[in-house]
Length: 318
Image 1 (spheres, rainbow, N blue to C red):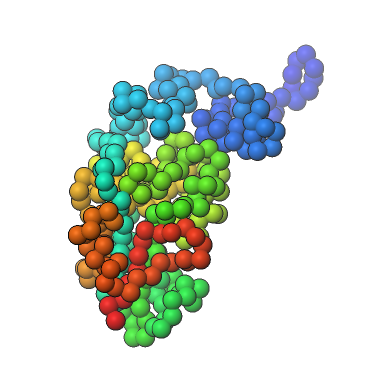
Image 2: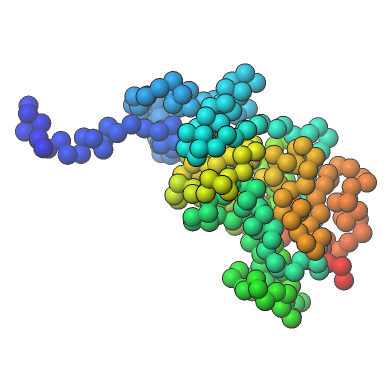
């Protein structure tokens, strides 16, 4: 096909001027700012919007600048989108951190049997894609007497656990006090909230994966494809910064089930553990189980040398 006036081919024009999503607009602007001082974003053409909803999503402000009224509109918009795309009635909330609370996790390696029930409970609670399946928790089978994750087996047979001469160490987001992922994000899409939980605004994320590269714990997951979840398996109780269904091209990870824990419930993985290996609580409460473990047990953190100061602790009974 050719342009009548010039006789030149127009085959590439559709691609050149195809509508921009908000994510591609921000991504181009963020990467362009690194190269030419941020002027690229201002020069990009805005897309033609089909309706007011997409226009509102495009110009949605950063989370910390949203008024309660604007956030309420966003939550209702997401509920509408979930119904249109997945055919279910969802309730999307934005639970805030509880004042005076710093969440922390402690895992008794002596008790973990490697059954991986925590992995599957997490997938179900957090609306993770089933095809391909995204998992936040990896359970490592480790040789007795070592604490070297490089010698672990990520793909052991869960039907044969616990195996003699082995122990099991689940690894997930460590909710660091000094998170490397937050420093790596070029657009402020991830941050450490007031209760210590490192969160992601999926609407603000541009999918550059810098946070994934920066994390020393392999805790972040990228949606290479549109998440696929059978309708009957979708958890309709959703949190804006938590388990709402993520779009293709965004990062996601464990958030200590903030939609549950900010209401006083346990994370789903702790609730599902049949061996009582997982303990969760408030680091600022001197009478909490977490503080007791830190005082009385031999406690370890993963990759202490990274300087991230994890709030996910491991300990042994013996």
